[in-house]
Image (cartoon, rainbow, N blue to C red; front, side, top):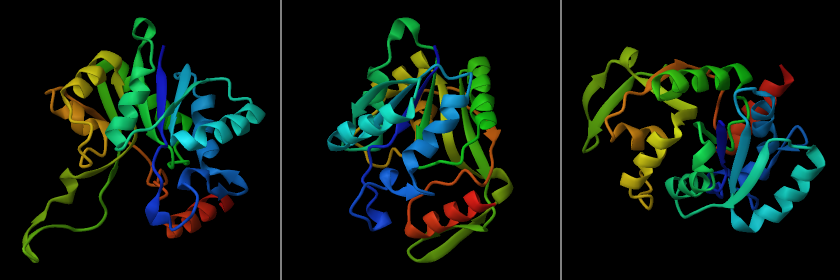
Length: 225
């Protein structure tokens, strides 16, 4: 059974809102439900676990019940860091039936069914796969407010989500990780430390993470297209 863990336990301080950003409305619908929609539609995903701030779980379940989310199996309270939150979601998966685990940011509402399918398929074949996008800006390595060198952007990619792994591989990575380290901002970073090869799948630049009020304006523009 392939499981999606939707990491939505952050409070979104950069959004400058009194509500967690995953519950802000986009075209009249909370962002989290836009995010869940393609996972509901994707045949490669059989169940969904949502990781939320503990105090938001009841309200979310009330709204989810009205939307008939067939694949939603668990709502799990988040931890103090992203890694801690995702580990709690991972713990909720039944090992006996676990297949591929797809971890996705709760505030990336524009991922497509096709992107999810592609990354899951690659992980089933190779063990680990992540969605990426090209870097379009010129990137500089700096130290002490000075440029050290320019990096070759043809060799660089932005990490997107979902990031997909065989259950046992991701479980091993978390057993070796310090989940209280705030620098661990994606699952690939943990799995890389095991020495596993991680396949990259090119994704769309539209698969943005909604972090600031400006991102909401971009998201509204995407929906109008």
